[in-house]
Image 1: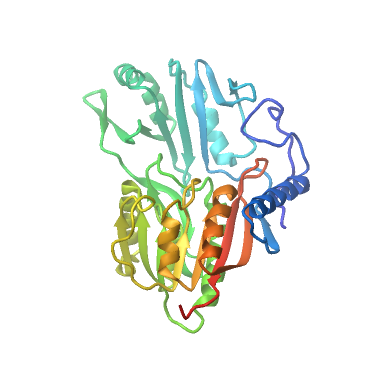
Image 2: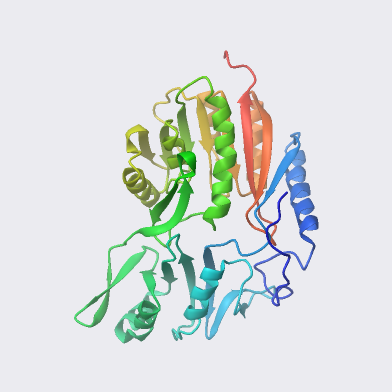
Length: 377
């Protein structure tokens, strides 16, 4: 377990609900996470093999910061369920902290709203303002707050549909969504590639921690493809391409099954920009609720579902009878239940890696390698 940063003391720790551990030593936090994972496996009737624990450090990891505006306060929900005004957060990068410092200077004059700040790989700044329609209308008419954001170097995205902001004849108006490069992956030979998305798109909180997940997956995939130039891969929950593009860059063929239409559009854009679209096929539908019409044979199933897990899609995946499956989860409870279905369908848990991309909280990512016991049936 490597530790790159000091266990700094946050002045808001006792009141803020963003972090869960009240000044516990990091080693103790790590043990609690391992114990929680073990308990979830035990309750599902599963044996947990020895777990590799990967730490990327204790602080300053996040390139994305989600918080709330309430009256004159900007921050996170406190333990008393009210918004705690936070001037600094030890979990965000210095570049994002600087963006947050500038954002805090602006008085939007609204009762309540949600905000996402991002700083991209090229230090570009983005803000997603998810405010009530009446507040958006008022801010468009006044224009002062939006102009301040633009002057501070922010790209602005507004509302649930991720509308962009344009200025025509001195007036601010909403326009179609505009993607920019807000994330990064490592392709073959660790070549960095910036991924396009909306500011409001789902991504991991940090491309540094996300690339650690990719390295775990690549290590397993590399051992599978030693005697084959390319694998055929079924990927569920690809998002904007965090795992997809690295797989394609190593020459593998990937069929993506994704329920988020916008994510598939961004994935297609990223595949084309990286010139990796030739061996990619994208299917978009709600695969958690309906079966796949035609199921080809795959060498590998890569699964990265939301917190709710695979739901009914777990039976579709086991029906593939793929020799190897890799499951990445941010929620050990749903992971354990899905793994139970895999074990009942003839799979064995071969390896487990815990990647701690959420230090100071109870959350973590778990990567699991599964193999079919009897590959002849």
